[in-house]
Image 1: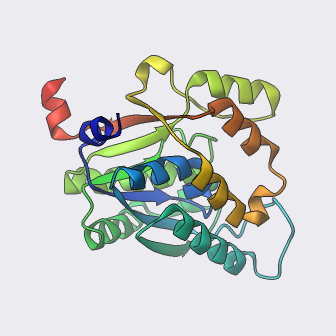
Image 2: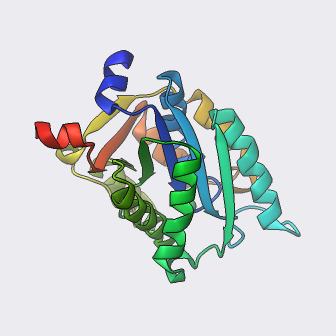
Length: 231
Ligand SMILES: [Zn+2]
């Protein structure tokens, strides 16, 4: 199954583009660790230091604290290289897309990647920072002719979360999902633990992972050319 999945995915080196420290673990963690098992290397670009978070204990320098958490979590997930930028948390949507896209391009070329991995275009949680990070990644991928794979959630999961919490998760109809992959969440949980400032008191995250079980959902926002020919 794993060899078959690697073949169906068709890439060997991926650039994950995230808005905040913890997105790579809370959102993409099980996908990145599963890719590692398939021999797919991950390079990570994160646009902000997450200093606007209202979760968890306040420290004197949340940006610095969260940067260290990100480094530790990325190491757990087997990320090959990490580039952390300092765009303003909560205000990514105000930054010129060309500027962000240039950063994605730099990271994609430095990592010699053949695919880009993002949060689904809705931002999953609806966070405008997530949406902007994905938009910048897509703009770059179009320029470099790279496929774009998005992490998404089935609407069964998002409907449950939205009814149980005051949340605005946006999912996909299960029929629209390209890959439903079986994952082992051990490394993801370990990486989540490295983001203690954000994960120690996070019932929505715990519930979401429980609803997802051992499945992750991926969708092509821009399919590789071979798949385009096939379809
Ligand atoms: Zn985030």
